Length: 176
Image (cartoon, rainbow, N blue to C red; front, top):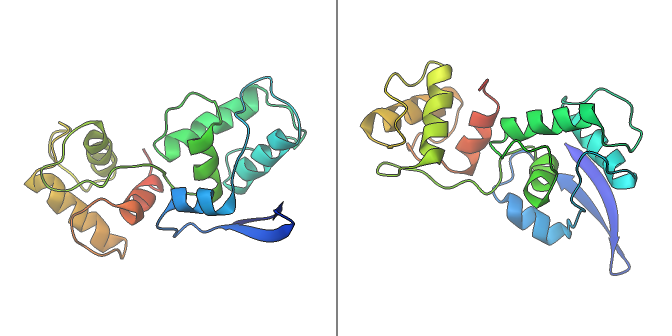
């Protein structure tokens, strides 16, 4: 968990990133989380904050010096991979939200009948971890639903076969 105090409108608020948060976007909006876009070559206090967050999530172990170099970029890409974001090494609003929450953000709710790249991601992660034995085809059919239910049961989640925020968060903790 990461905590930071911010002063907004002459009022001090404690920002606490809760990894069980149901709505990461609501967290960012409520907390006034407005951060600059960072990339290799950026410097300053925001980069130090980024380095501290990456250290907290065990993706960066270098100096907290406020310099966005190759090692910070590598750590950002690793974290982006973990939370299913584009691995571009650029820290924009979604990456900041994911860093504060410790969970994937802006992911669709998937269920029987869903299709697309997000379903492929779920199928691939479940397959890599022994829950899914079917083809990674991007179609959420009966085999995917059974695999999701087995995964949810194993992780102590409501076993409804629907991939929502809590299931996305649990999936992000698996090797992939």
